[in-house]
Length: 200
Image (cartoon, rainbow, N blue to C red):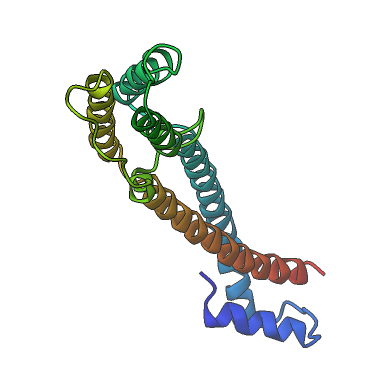
C-alpha cells in the first residue's frame, strides 16, 4: 500500500523538486518502494487472473443451468403438447382450444430458449388457467398429464437455484475485484513516478 511517506514524496515530486540523492529519508523511501514494486505487480497479476477466471465462470453459468431431469421433463411436455394434444387429433371444443393455447403459453413462458439460463420467477407471470375440463372430456387426461408435468418442472426448477441472484453476486464480486485492481494500479503508478524521478 502507499504510505503517507510515499504520497508525500509523490506530492514533493509534483511540486517540481529535483532529485539530488542527498536526503537519506527520501533514499530510504525510494529503497522501500523499489522492494514493494514487484510485490504490487504480483498482487495486481493475481487479481487480474482472479477477475478473468470469475468472468469465465459467470459467463458459463449464464449460458446454461439446466439439469438432465429438467430437460427430460421438457421433452415429455413437448411430445404431448405438440404431437399428441393436436388440433388434428384431439381438439374438438372451445374449451379444448382454451387449454391448448393456455398450455402453449405456459410452455413459452417457463421453458428457456437454448443457451438461455432458467429463472424460476417466470412462474409468477403465468396467465390465468381456463375453466377445468369435465372428467368425461376426451382431453381431460392429457391436459392433466401436461399440467402435472409442468408442476414437476416447476419443482425441479426450484432446485437449480436463482440464476439472477447468482449472477448479481458474481457481478458484484467482479466490481470489487476491478476496484481493487484500479486502486493498486494507482499505487503502482506512484511507485513508478518516484523511481523514474530518482533516475533523472
